[in-house]
Length: 366
Image (cartoon, rainbow, N blue to C red):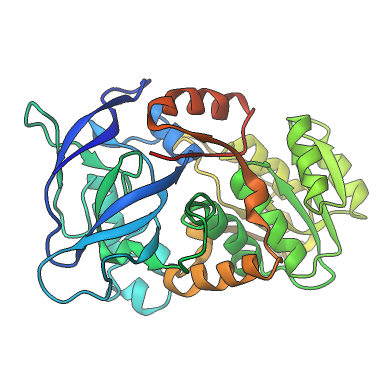
């Protein structure tokens, strides 16, 4: 079938919105009419070359849509199902999936690195016959997408598509980091470095988990103001004085600190802002060449923990419904993260806003 999508052909961009041919779904795959796709720093890191991916590629990995077709054979999905697409197509049978750590799915990671669907196929084709790669199994900056059914989670029919899309990355990554990776419990003092969609989702989840203090850290004043409106108890301007400010506000360091920036120097700050016995969690994706320097003694003498968190340590088919239920109950008001809706042809403008720090979570509505 014919569709339109935003293709990255070279590092630095811009994305080009072009006509594409989309092959029908194969066994275990779905044809989805994309209704909303969030703009995320993980897309931006491919555009600017921080994350090396095979090109050309149709970007977009945080999406929601409607199933309009299924591949040959039986399918757990039906035409008309509303689905959220997550960026790790978990196979369900590798050692990590069996252990309940689907974010580390080995076949899923291999497919994502290769720019294919979980089964190894590429279903997109440019007019000249070139087959663009899929971004993290989704390629949501398009009118239609073929995805592995393992990338999809069914959600209620009354969940707005622009809100639903956020559950595919921002909410899974941020809320999962707070609930699972950091293990925020009632009474915790929490700090969040970086207040984009992921960071604010982490903030919302920390409050929902019972944190009595949440310190919001960012260089952008408007984001700190939004964080206060969403329940942060304190705000700190990002920069060289942030560590001392957080430690002072929390009485010697926070119990749980979540870094969402993907900046190695900020991760060092997040660790230093963590108190004795505390846990530092990082979800950002720094350039692979970056290194961090930390006081090694503190890991033992202060019983400190430093953890990485991918996909919020979530299992999408378990956690998307859980988080949607919290949203519907008013405990995770993630709709407050939406800062703009864009047409597909406006995607480059959206990434300019994202790079400048102006926007929190924009969505393309094709």
